[in-house]
Image 1 (cartoon, rainbow, N blue to C red):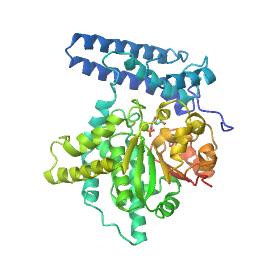
Image 2 (cartoon, protein in one colour; image 1 turned 60 degrees about the vertical axis):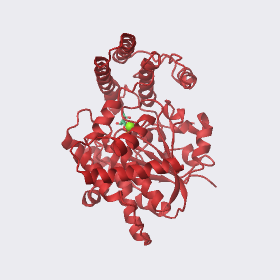
Image 3 (cartoon, protein in one colour; image 1 turned 180 degrees about the horizontal axis):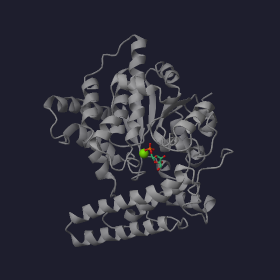
Image 4 (cartoon, rainbow, N blue to C red; image 1 turned 135 degrees about the horizontal axis):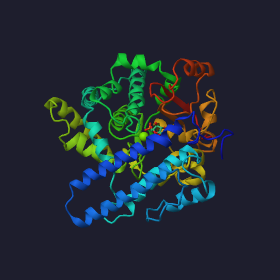
Amino acid sequence: NQPPWPAYRGYHEYSFAHATMGVRLPTILAKAINDVYQTLNQEYDEGRVLDLLDCVERMQQLMDDLHGNAKLRPIVDDGAGDVALWNKEIAKFFRGKDFMNAPWLFAEAYKYRRLRECFSLSKYWVEYDVFFRQKCDTFSRSAQAVFELAARFSEPQQIQSSTEKNKLIFLELTQICLWGNSTDLSLLIDMTEEDIKNLQSTGGEHLAATEKNILGNDLHKLADYVLTLKGGRVDFVLDNAGFELYCDLVYADWLIQAGICSQIVFHGKRIPWFVSDVTRKDWDWILNTACLHGHLFEDAPEEDMHQLRAMGRRWKQYEKEGKWKYEQHPFWCTGFSFWDLNNEAPDLFQYLSESDLVIFKGDLNHRKLTYDCHFPIQSTFPNAIGPMASDPGAPPVCSLRTIKSDVVVGIPEEVGARLDEEEPGWKISGKYAVVLLSAGNKG
Ligand code: F6P
Ligand code: MG
């Protein structure tokens, strides 16, 4: 199962793959090592200290492998349950390949699995997440947008029977959910509070202006479909923790309150992944700590906190009642693209095919949907996602993605050509986005 276009690879100097493999990944790893040192300095038990130092040594080995462009070796069996899947993929497709000449999508995912191995081989630090500190910290610096949304959506919504009004709210929330993807931490390594505010602006005027940056825009088609649902099921294949997840939850909350959905399934990652992706711990943290019981926003007025907590309580209730479900299938943390989802994880495909709509959030999910290859820009979205659109049982799929890497589809050729000329770098700036829909093949 593969499209007729070559995948991006680290040695393609014209592509973001090159900068990512050569510079960004080592930078991210160096920052991760600093995080471990911070933890180490707060530890006092000698056994745990020594065990953590062994983790650092393995991280340093990974750093050498990245710098030296080493061959991709099998993952050491750490009993994690996904090792066979990883090693099968390495042996079958990437034997003898190194970080730069393996497909970018695979090599980058492999780096995060190797990072996991640094800890999974330890005695005390198996669950350690080197990105957890940054994820929490960035959310705590997102107060303004967090409270703006809480002020609007914390009270139970009076859902308007007029479909026109519903449609407007839906369009607005979809955009909030889309642009929430701008705050991915793997690109924004040193963000100031001001940067965060600009990225998270949720006002109506701002959203009207940003709609013109949605280059492939199925927003209205999406609204027309979703607003016909009653008591349906929507799945979110999540991307980033913190503010993006918060926006996803506000959106999902509205879908429940509007009666559009009776169930929402959220799909997260089993291991720390591409810096800011949601793990079960991030999920629990945002509900329990950030929204409900914590003291994250020190100077926040009582009224703001009251609204945030009310929302958090409602969300916990959804979870208790099974209206919201958090799942973490191992397939999401492999190097496979979603062209292989049905082949490699038929149980997951079957499960997704029971959904009325599967929303894939973010850039990485989009790369995986489109095989991260040189698709011509005007390719249609259903074409570009192959089996996820055409296999029998394929559910309706929507990609909400701010564009941060090379593969772009669903856009008129001339728009791409103009941007190439006027704004080199437009594919990695995160300024532009796509909202693309495939109807699926449920028959
Ligand atoms: O490292 C590359 C990348 O996968 C890009 O595609 C993107 O810049 C980033 O990492 C992750 O973005 P997102 O969190 O939106 O998937
Ligand atoms: Mg991400």
